[in-house]
View (cartoon, rainbow over the protein chains, first blue to last red):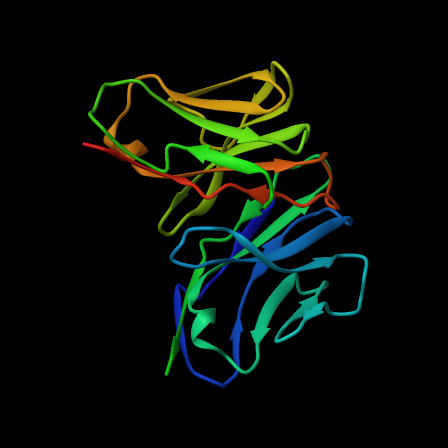
Length: 113
Length: 114
């Protein structure tokens, strides 16, 4: 069974600094995608970034980038130049062939002014 | 906008009463999902549908039933609500099944069972 683990329930960072959120997963599949979702207080689930397992290059989206270590089954999210609007819950998620999307427990990130 | 709406947005109900949550999509996507979100658990799959009248159970399906009589609507029913079903419920849609098809989420329904 696929599992996703986020070991940091809460984190905080000063505005303009960099923070890294950790995620590990367990699977025997070779073809899968990994995602980071942001959930602000509005409750909306917003896709931040996604990574295809067969691509070695780490995905980046503006201030957001990932460190994908396939052998270690690790998928961390780095947020650079943190902004107050980055305050939210962040969920790591995994999906593979013929399976539904699985989520980690989430990390609550607070950006402090 | 992604074309997925959930109703109601908030609901308070009493233990033992039936409750139905609605998910409506305008994207004509084949797959629809119901998740519940609880602190410390993230989102967990309750039921999903892969077509009209085609549904299957997820990880936490006990106490829930679903129906999909039209492509655009996916209903989640709690036959007799319990306090353990107090949660935030999310509907999601995807065009097909497979790792390269992302999910689009609704804005969630906060259900409180008192």
